[in-house]
Length: 246
Image (cartoon, rainbow, N blue to C red; front, side, top):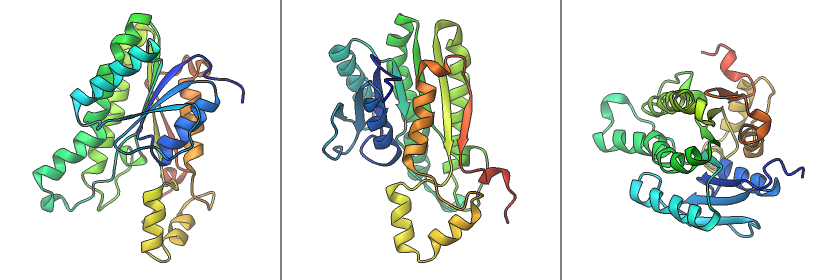
């Protein structure tokens, strides 16, 4: 590897599987000191990755995890807010509890992390935050409420913080993945025969994306190569969101 993150301290949430795990592993291979944050232990072996158990919806736990990271490594240079989960419901059947859970997990949790790491970044006048949003933050799919509400908010958070702190050396960008072969998608395909084939046929490249492809985009945005990219969102969906579908 080329060491594109050599010497940087990176915090990655949702690092136990899928996009988060792929990102943590890639960042470590590229020279970063990586701390993975998740509610579950990360599968071994993971050379070069430290691990911390914490729930991103718990602001106190997030602050403690960030302070532990700063105490051990002196700072946080890169934050990747990846943790989140689908919450789909018919709108009028959605409980208040599920509404709050969706926003806490897919929007407020990212804010908890941003709020916790920004002071150390601002003190140094440098930092990169990458939020993993979704194509649901750009296009509405029936039956997926209220998940798109949270992801629209996450893209808004990205833009607002990016502009707020641009002059102080902080960059905040987001990535909007489409259909990616993470464990929950694999489980869906196993439960529903034919779903893999139907979904693949909708994608212009006629294949489904991989967690590693999202991770490489996060790597670029986190690196100094992207130092003039700020308050931007990059779609990783094979072009599907550009094509009209019934």
